Amino acid sequence: METHLLPLSAVTVLAAGALPVSPGEDGVQAAVLEAPEFAEPVLMLSAGTPVSTEAPGYASPAWYDVDGDGRSDLVVGQFKDGKMRVYHQTEDGTLGEGSWLMAEGEVAEVPGVW
Amino acid sequence: MDLNRDGIVDILSGSYSRMEESMAGLFQVLYGVEGGGFRKPTPVLGTDEEPLIIQVAGEAEDVDVRKICTRPTAADLDGDGLLDIVTGNFGGSFAVFWGTNEGFDPVSVMLKGSDGKELTVHHHSDPVLVDWDADGDLDLVTGSGFGGVSMFPNIGTKTEARFGDNVVLVPTPEAASNGVTVFGDEHIKAPGSSTRVEVADLNGDGKLDLLLGDSAQLSFPAKGLTEEECLERCAAWDKEASAVYETSPDIADWENMTPEESEAQEAFNEKIQALYQKRSEFIEERGTGYVWALLQK
Image 1 (cartoon, each protein chain N blue to C red):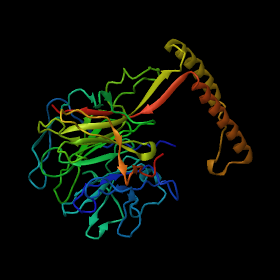
Image 2 (image 1 turned 30 degrees about the vertical axis):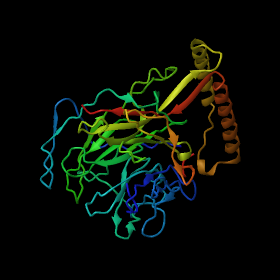
Image 3 (image 1 turned 45 degrees about the vertical axis):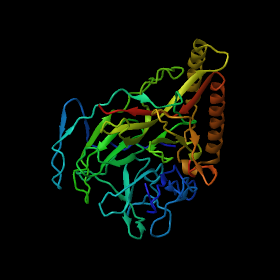
Image 4 (image 1 turned 90 degrees about the horizontal axis):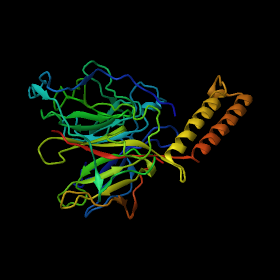
């Protein structure tokens, strides 16, 4: 497939300090947007192993309490077969082993990927 | 998100392509059921009872790049109490299907910046709507095909969103290897390309953090080969590949190839297939996707 690239619109890269932002029309826009600083990226682990997808990849995460236990769980969509893997958060805050999201008793597969 | 307003959370997904009629990707919903679990995916329909497809009024219908690789999120962008669907696409722009009391308007509208131009990132936009700057309205956070994370702050209102300039939350990564084969996964220290974003307070400190999905390519020497031996064969293969690609037939019109051109192209395709079969005999290459947590300080 041909890769199409569109021009990037005006980009502002946040460095240390703050980014001035014009007040919004509703008057509640923060006057200054603090520059976000992030800690070094950390791989999400499941039972001690990095969470990863089947080939060809393309992990798409969601953070939601799937099992209703009051703790958010990790749901990861992937390209292959349009499947989603659920990693339940345990009491100690770690993620357990993953299992495929089920729908009506079968592994859920979103059509339109392969 | 609760797409059908039954009080039970549903899962909303995009898709690459429906692979028929056109390359358009559909939107699929897995409705949550009472007591837990989900129904099988079903396309999200518009008020015309047809599957929602990105389509801008007055725009040619064959602009596939704006319709495939959909990645939706549902949120009330216009403050009317109804969910709207904002989606990314392969082209890197953002379309919105407005929610009405009768369902979703089937005609999508492209989101634009304050300069009147469409919001875009490098191909494959991946929108999440969240009040990133805590000013009471929804901002647009997105990944992209090249990686990194951008945020378009909402500089309008809760009922009339207007988006300001692209603020880079996570820079686009530099090319990982510059053509040099690196084996294993030890060298992977940060998110790669094709970032998919989730925003949440992961550690409960009151600040929004990022969960990033990505795409990564892994290489391993084939069984029985050392890394050095594998690299030697890679170098030899590169030379052979260059020679093969130089024999690529010159096709004037891909839509209307002559019989001679078709024959030449078929022969070339066979050579390419043999080339990559040969490569797979000394190196294992596969893609995967990781999930990274970036905690905001």
